[in-house]
Amino acid sequence: MYFIFLIFLSAIFAMTLGIPDAPFPQGDEIMHIRSVRESLEVGSYTLPVLSGLPNPYKPPLLFWMGMLFDKIFGISYFSERFVSFLFGLGTFVLFYKFYQSLSKSDKETKLATIAFAFSFLSLKFFGLLMMEGAMVFFTLLYVYLFFRSKEEKNLTYVSCGSFFVGFGYLLKGPILHIYIILFLVSYIYLKMIRVRKGHFHISFQPLIKEKQTILLFSLSFLIPILWISYLYLFTNSGKELLRFFFITENMGKFYAANQSGLRIWGGWLLYTIPFTIPLLHSVWLVLKKTSNDKNRILVMVFLVFLLFVTIFHLMPNRKDPYYVTPFISFLFLIPALKKETWETLILSKYNQYSIPIVYFLLTAMAVVLRLPLLFAVSLAGIILSLSAIAFQNKNKRFYGVFITQILILPIIIFLFVRPMADPDITEKLTDVKGKEICVIAENPWTAMDVQNKLINSKVKFALPLTYRDTCPEAEMIVTFLEVTLTEDWKKVSSWMQWKQHLNLDTKETLRALLKVDKRIFQSEVSVWKREEIR
Picture 1 (cartoon, one colour):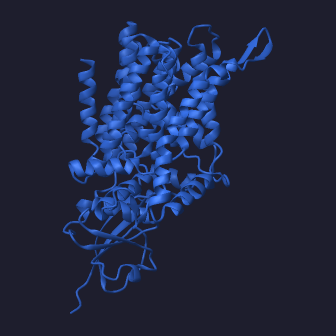
Picture 2 (picture 1 turned 90 degrees about the horizontal axis):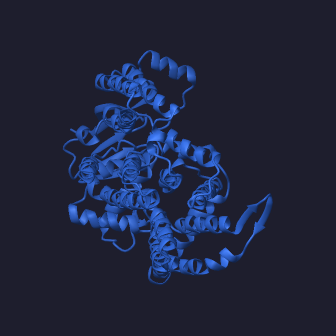
Picture 3 (picture 1 turned 90 degrees about the vertical axis):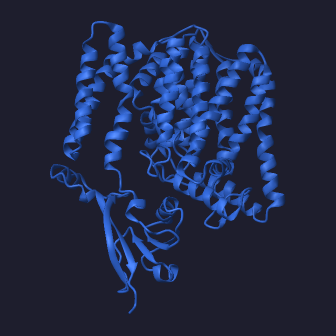
């Protein structure tokens, strides 16, 4: 019954993949989808292209898989996002097996898997054509196979894990290798360092013992070497691509800091929602309690590893919160290592009382934004969560709190994000098949997004001052900025959509909220058609 329930939930989630505007979008997905479709259009299967040139930003694995599913199912958002959906299913299988091997409890394993499946990480990145979902899978795969190798004293597992890391290179380059090296350093470091009776001891015996594991990691370089050799020897632009990717795209990120490091720390809080409090509680219990159980070293390996990757991501100039997503699954594994039950974590005072507070905030937002269905459901959530807390029966209290907790993000998606979403541009722009459309916007990503949605139209990007030269043959112009067009263009329709960049002070925001005036947060999108010359 449990697995039938998960299959049912997966089917519902899969049905949402084809909706162009994802509930929790990520800007880079626009470029990835554009690269997949453009590569198919021009027949560049080996080397994906973007804007007519070989795509220098990322290796090709995600694009190859997107092209494969576009070939199988037809060009659509569903086909392309199905790639990440499959990586998500693979991650859940791995997580289930890993948790079960650590906790030895079917009930705890099932609860942990459901919690992980309803986390912000899972509901966002396993439904977008992004590298992050696959990175979660490959990182967890290596660590799982590493521990299977230690448990069964069989190097075949770690050999396979090392080989599969090579595929991870084809996602985002050498970053996965760095993650795994940091994991191995964490493991060997904690084996080498000992503090006994106030004395600090270093033993190099573990380093010698792990010699084979370290040597086997060289298998992870087989696929990268083959791909780099192919680019260098057999493609015209291979040398330039490699130079741009390694020097500009990767090493260039360490040139100077331009984002706050708090964004990385915020990622740990953001992508564990709605189970942030239980997971912080489990980490606190690890740090607070000293333990001599057999998993003590493994717990500390995880915590040191998570600290190392956090420090690493504090170094480059970009510090986007989603950089921590490959490691969120390890936070969900910590309760298994410490033999903490999810009942204890969910029924902690801070967690169980936070649930009605969240529903109260959703109710307040529903009133301000005039969303009656969200108001009704959120009000029911307050009543149910408070009723659950009042149960004397601990089992009923746990499931009451747990169910209302896992429903928070689905409610936000379907009753808050969807009703507040921008209008569907395919419904606003009708009868455009085969026509040339000029998109005037701040950056080319907007035009790529329009092109992804209007598959059968030809979309060009232009700046306000260059549209006459860039789009001389355009039959329609869509403006995302305030712009003055020549007299031969007639405005035929417009709509409002949420601004991507807001420069508001606190007073403006409060004034807009009190007046229930959302126009300050929105900008006008206008559609113009060329008038016929008589």
